[in-house]
Length: 393
Image (cartoon, rainbow, N blue to C red; front, side, top):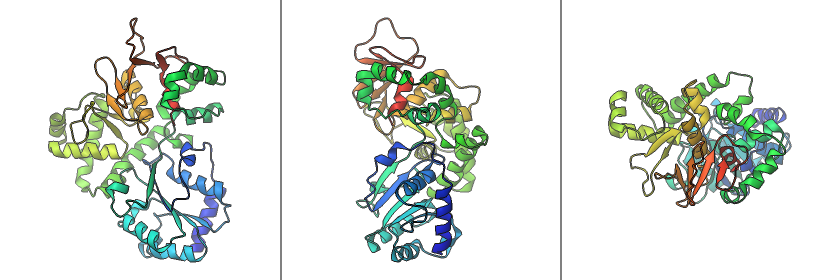
């Protein structure tokens, strides 16, 4: 069975388009023997695995092999047996896509890790998958990473032909004016920012298909495949979780009324809380808490995971303030702890930085607040342009 898979591997690498090199490529220690790449459906996990192969191996080099676990071959042949054949044939790196399609995937990966000490395995799957501390079989042997959609930096580099590097939050807060001026000498970020908010997060906007229809299809797949399969939900409950997502998307980013949602979805408060967690795990929504609170406490705010989802769910009716907040929390999420702010600020980061998002800077500024505006290319002192937070990864 190796030969057909090698032919597929070679074809995919020879026809791979790589418009953007993801920054995560340089953050991973590729010498680790078991690496997990988690990401929501549509963010480019398959392309990421193939990019790694293309950068490090010739397409005809049989030391590396990409395999999609959607193949019906693995209904009759165990992955352990297949990995053993690849290993005996001189294989060194096995790239496994859609690993969660195997019912016992974590046990199989652990067995491969134990049996083939010189084999490196990189696997990709849904954000809903449980890895490391949540999965005892992989705890201590697996290094996991999150692949997100395009940042505004990555989108800008592609659309404007720039080579902007990622910046840290400290760099932005300390010298945002200089950074913005350097970038604005090369391009006009605001010319591209609205397009990014609408369709720039998911790489498949580059495909010659209707983006909104494709995104709606992807969102349905996240629920109908990822959540249903991994959380073993009953088919009859799919419409309930879809209705909940729509209600959350159309009611703004405030504090959810769990009791009212339970009544409308015709289920219990406990089930609503579970569904909210499932949607968050699938990266369809993000949950924010107040300082000192966390799951399983009641969420302080719920918003869509990214702005592209807002346009897909409520086309023609996107609130500007919600759009700003959603972009900001999505850009910050993953590298910093973000909390709901108090009366004087919108968000609190790392229990240290206080940010207030609004397009009118107050005449009297609070000295401990950083103001964020979406209508500026270059800020001043305490005022940072919103687009610049898209430079964090």
